[in-house]
Image 1 (tube, rainbow over the protein chains, first blue to last red):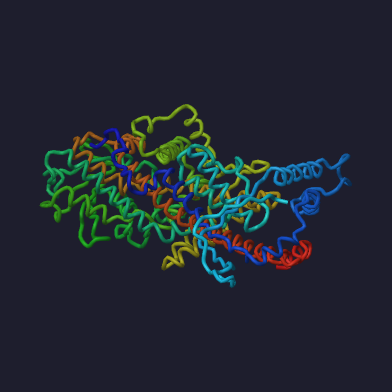
Image 2 (image 1 turned 180 degrees about the vertical axis):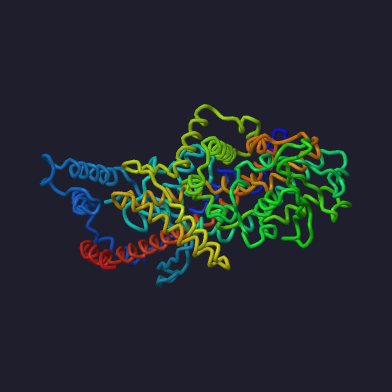
Length: 149
Length: 479
């Protein structure tokens, strides 16, 4: 009679999906959440050049006020009417946003990379003093810096 | 990453996708999900996942699928396991051919009814109201029934007459059975059945006989399985039959063993400890037996509720499922029966939240008990009988299984493989369903993210041409 101890280890192939294994099942489910990231569409450079000048810049107070005005969407009390004294949640919201914006404005640095192959049109003076226009493209990577405002 | 961390991350991913598609997160991964631990019970985890994804109505669909569509596949898997186990039993013997004493001209193999009938099924008349829920194919002549248990019951009623089994389902007889209630020579004990090979099998091997017998019996039937599930949870039939606490305690032991084997991992060694019980387990079995005897099941809501499913409801469900002629009709019948019972149970609650929790617990109980109910089929005379015959051939006439737990212990390979096979079938269905729902959720999240990116792109373009952000916010709210 086959009543020996049943060591299941030897019966379980490690290279196949095992429906008895919680690990295999968790791996399959975790993998199903993985999706490839698609890059966002770049903004048109001429518009960026012009429109960038029109940006008003970041305002911690404005961001905090927008968040506080939408607090009711999350079921939170807005204002001091129903609070016992000052609404500390709203005050905390303002502090949080101020600190985040301060960090971004005062400490953040933007690094810009310009890829090679950017078209270049240049004007120079020829041997006879006549203007010479040359067309070409950059051959090296360029870099630049900026700050968040 | 540990099992618990990975489980929490999955629920976190669902919450994140939900937040993306529906706004603010609505999913909480608190203790209401019993699977959020380091345990290896995949079925409970998947049911929790489906509950988190879509709710209990959809969870009910998985039960409907298993009962209406997947039983044939599960039965095939079980029969493969049964044949393999019987073959391993036979291979322990010296000679694989039939011993002369089991051939049609021999003295046969003798066993008493209670040695193969652990659940006292043979005490219930198939034509009675309860019997019609426990047996299959109960027609005019029970000896012609395609259900071996029904055939055996009638064989026992025909004291001293030899009846053949096999022609009912496979054309020719495989075994013959003779029941003697009281042996006048006092050689055999009362209620002895003598089994012999049919003359057709005198020149065949024991493996041929075993395989053909296994193919000749129907193991799983939608209406019987559903009936057994309801009885296991609420005791609707057991209380009507007035089963003893001792008997119900033994049946609760089977559930304990099945539960313990269900949660084993591939590295666990299945030894005899799985078939013995701690004092806590015995207490739980006794409490379960008492609940079943009273025909009740304790449901925990804000206030505990003693729920029951009337015998008449089980009869109506059985009739409805039995009258279905194809899998679609079976599915509809199962669906309407479960919804009807769920709504009836839900009406016991004092508020809608509790009502939903009761319905959810009901469906969860069905999934939790389906493996045990399928294993019950293996522990009925139609399977235990052929195993006892083989056991006696190898170990002698006096060898026997003392009870269901001893049978499971002696055939632990079989029981383990069957439980894992059933578990794999259920996991396949649950996993397919969960992955489908995750796919829908992730797709919706991707679409929402793409829409958000497009809106932000347009908004950024607008700010670059001088449109104030307040106007852009207004436009975004309109989109």
